[in-house]
Image 1 (cartoon, rainbow, N blue to C red):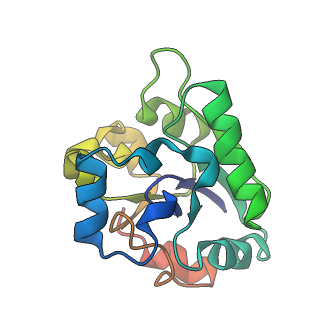
Image 2 (cartoon, helix red, strand yellow; image 1 turned 60 degrees about the vertical axis):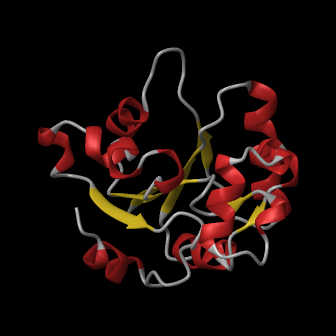
Image 3 (cartoon, one colour; image 1 turned 180 degrees about the horizontal axis):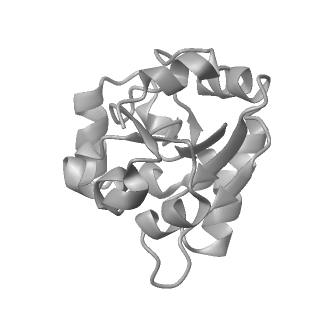
Length: 166
């Protein structure tokens, strides 16, 4: 099973969001709190490393997708994933004029786990929204609330695939 997981807002967040409720975190984003752009100090959202390790231990192929495009920022996200014990997996980014849907369609995962993009416009900003209908039927969408984490998702990858709402 190939799982694409968005990083920022889905499994990691800016450090000053720790302990805040979603409303306050969204306010930080809209008010451009400096820590939002301090990628090297991002932290896991709840127990996301444990959840993804559980999937990895069942032979799920984990692929991370970052919103960052600058190489130094991509490296900072990669370093955060390693620092906090996320399982190994390729970290992808958009290249040139690529959109997220282009990346997803190129790798064709079984499931895509992404947040609801509430801070940047909602469902219209989600990757799954823009994937071609022909390819969308092959990719299961697992949307989560932005900054709420993935702890509530099943540990078992078979149940995760069933949980998907594609």
